[in-house]
Length: 350
Image 1: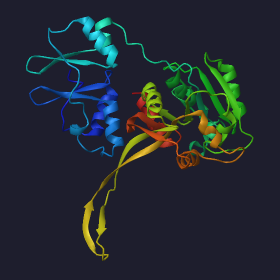
Image 2: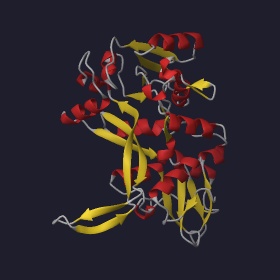
Image 3: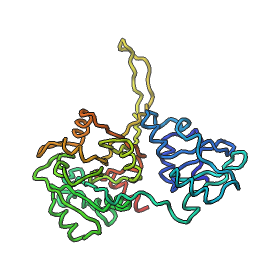
Image 4: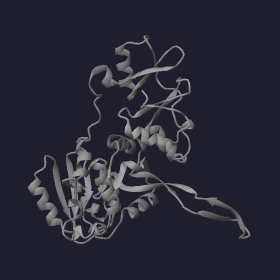
C-alpha cells in the first residue's frame, strides 16, 4: 500500500516517477489521516501537463476526486470484476465507513490473470536507421549506429523488444549508411518477426525516406529513431493518438533545467529590476518516437532531404492535428551520445 499512496503536496514530476515505478499504474491520493481523496493515473498527469501546468506544481488539481470505490464487506467479486472491466480501471480502492483506505483490488488480484490488453500486432513500426551516427564515433566508423552493442545486444534489438513486447511483428527499416552490414546482421539473426528494408539512394533526412513507404500502411504506425530507448506504455500512446484524432503524435520527455547563476531581469528602461537566483525552467523535449497517420506521407516530397520538423510544420499548416504524449525524463535514453550511452550501460549492470 505504501508504494501507491501519495499526498497532494507532491509535484507532478514526483508523481510521474512514482507511477513509472509501480506496477499498478494508478496512485491513491490520501490525507494525513489515511482518508481517500482520489486517484491519480498517468492519463491524469498528461492532461495536467498538456493544459500548461508546471512539472514543479503539486498534484492538487490533477487527480480524480470522484473515483470508483468499494466499502469493505459491501461488494462481491463479480461486482468488482464487472466494474473493472466496464470502466477499464487499473484498480479500485477499498475503504471503511470513514473513507479510510484499507486496501485495493485489481483484476489480477481477483482472477489471478491480467485483463486482456490491446494487441498491437497489426501496427507497423518504422525504424529510421540511415544516419551516420557521428556522435558515437569512432565505433560508427566501422559499425552502423543501430549495431553498437549494449549489454551483449545491439541498440536495435533493445528498441525492437519494446515493440514486440506489445505484439508488434511488422518492422520497416530505412537504410543508407552501412546498410549492407545491417541487412547481413538480420539475415544472420533470422528473427521471429517480419523485417523489411527500405533503402535510400542518398540521405533524405529524418523523415524524407518515409515517402518511400507511401502505400503499404492502412492504419496509424510507429516511427522511431534508431538511437533512443523509451520505456513507456506503447498501447496507451497508440490509444492516445487514435482517440485524440491526431495526424502526428510525438512523444516528449519532461525535462527541467536549472541555470546555475543568478539571472538579471531588466525593467522597461533597461535598468535592473531584480535577480532570479538559479532559475529553473521546464521543457517538453522531442524524443524521436512518433505515431503517424498514413495520409501524412503524401506531404513528404519525393527524393528530397526532409526532416521530421518539416513534416510536423507542414502538417500543421495544412490544418492537421499534432499531439504531444508526455513521459517522465527517466523513461527516455538517447544512446546516440556517449554520456547517455555509458549511463544506460552502467544502470543495466547494477
